[in-house]
Image 1 (cartoon, helix red, strand yellow):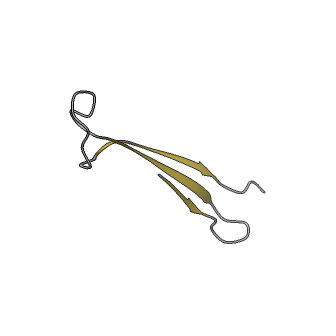
Image 2: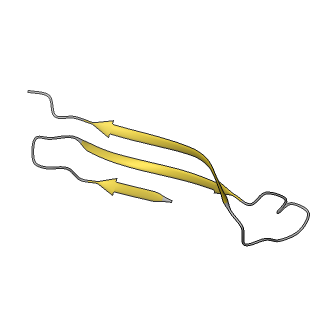
Length: 47
């Protein structure tokens, strides 16, 4: 799942990526997902 925060002009922009996985899904399909990892990319304005 991706979430984009465009920020304000001249400010910081970020993209947050949340990776979910379904525990045990390799043996039995499931609709239950757990947050496995979060990665945030940020870029600020240089002057």
